Image (cartoon, rainbow, N blue to C red; front, top):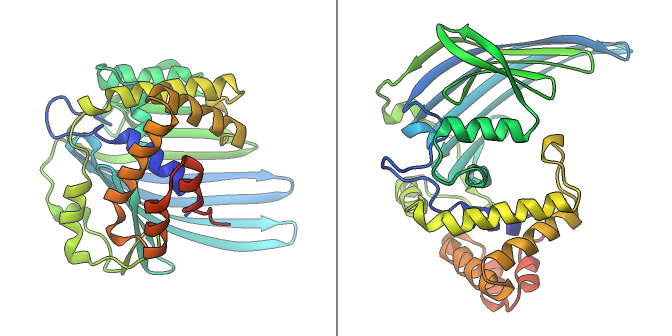
Length: 326
């Protein structure tokens, strides 16, 4: 469970970013959608030819608080002694701050906290979804270069580091890239918005389910678990959002470039965490808050790990309870 302690920290900051009223933090500026995409890719690099075809479907409700994304691709690689075909099939379902990741090869589902929910808080502060989305793109070096119509809907074209996206109300309807000679496109072929969706729209495969610690989950308890872990209110997260912004600023000062797409170095992560802890009242306050948050989610945690958390007295103690996966 790589960097579980860091994920928990971000999940703590993410608490209360989504709520079911008009003040909720919205991922998209449309309530619900069903979108079908066609995926294509081709090109050559160092004597190797690559060709990809595939399909993707995106379904969401509650402005993106509930979202299911399924993708199937076939990639053929030829040249330089290679002649192979790779098939991939992925499905992820996000229900507020919880994400379900389906592994079709191993026929299992992993349920975990979704740290990505916290990122929207960095650019929040009462702004509408269009302002937030455009600020994020601009901070990544993006520029709006025009408009187009995709699947019957007018969208704005943004160029971000050579990747062009045609975005409609926060939703990419077309994505084009040309990286190292490999051209890729993902284009919506059908898009329906503001439609009524039932539970079956987000139905997962009938596979056994496990938590992020590897413990099997009773599927009959899922609804109760999801409701329990749904963030209760945005107001509670305002100070946390500020702490996240302070942390990101510290990471950037330590050399982190958000536009690079690279992960932070250990030194940059340490700078971010220290700045966040200071913004939230210091290490002791942050430690007590995080320990409480982890123990609140400890029902399915292995007993040895839970005991370790209960006995921890400092952040360093707490980190030792969550060794990184190799």
